[in-house]
Image (cartoon, rainbow, N blue to C red; front, top):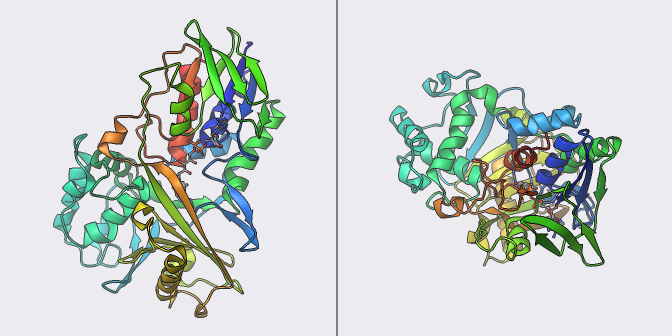
Length: 429
Ligand SMILES: Cc1cc2nc3c(=O)[nH]c(=O)nc-3n(C[C@H](O)[C@H](O)[C@H](O)COP(=O)(O)OP(=O)(O)OC[C@H]3O[C@@H](n4cnc5c(N)ncnc54)[C@H](O)[C@@H]3O)c2cc1C
């Protein structure tokens, strides 16, 4: 087998494609614009906090099969951790109350019958929202399908915002329905929360790079593709600011960049090319503490907590760093970052009040707000229609990225799956 495989973009979609082709006898070259690989899922040394953090907290579920297959291929399954049971602690800061959603392991949802395991105050009739979501049509939004009540307010709405990174009155109900079919409807075994033991790069990026290096694949960083030339219905050249690479007839190209970059690189080659063009941000607030606290109860078991009725949505504890995630964060774009940090810290103190071995101080030792402005495309019905498949009109070019038509939201699982799909589309495996 001959021919080079050029993979443009060293995010998880590009790395997944590279891992998929590696070892096939083809020469794989990853061209990554940034100084490191990982894209939107990476770890870095934060000077303000004085420690290494992830750009954003990433939560996976055992249902994310493509990710766990990828972790298996790169030998990194043991870098992940999480509670042994599908437990999700919550606190409601507006209406009061703490509870732990405690799913049953199998498909039969015994948990809904137990007031200690389900969402407090929910009526069993509210479960009809799940059915409505799973049967939703392509134009419906999540809020169309939610029966008002505690089950929607305390579980489905926050779950939707976290999974789709889009407000529920805009987010595609059919997409959330698919996520529910693949997770909650399969039972607790598919819903075990998982996250990296050390960091995103240590789990998802560094082991992949080590694996690729052993298999003699090249990963070139600091290499931004500036344009793509075509001839005879194929990609014929990749142009970098300081170099041009010829793509011969045996070579293939996988474009695994973000949607706006793909649209710009392909605008001449594929004039009617469409990709998502509306985005949502995610903000993460990281607070470093003087000393590592001990988490108690179900927060100690899960190491994260959902927060209802507040700006804060999810709190994670990693050693001496407390991190907060707020999804669909375009709504906070006008807010003063310092005020936002102060508000979130106050909420964290209230939320963790009884969940740590000692109270949190009035001020953290150090803090940092990280805005990922274009964290994901907005998962609206309209934007979903703009997602292209892996195949393109150019015979030797396939697309990958969380924004392609994976059927999944813009997630790590979607990104990894898209890389595999691009490889299959080009017949490389
Ligand atoms: C804050 C935050 C929190 C998130 N939380 C979760 C979560 O909890 N669970 C979950 O599953 N997902 C989560 N996600 C989504 C997940 O991170 C993404 O879906 C995934 O990382 C996307 O991977 P990708 O490879 O498709 O894109 P990217 O990671 O964007 O990779 C594209 C790569 O292409 C490179 N590139 C761009 N232009 C060029 C060029 N011209 N030439 C060469 N290279 C180029 C970029 O530098 C980048 O490395 C979160 C995302 C963010 C930002």
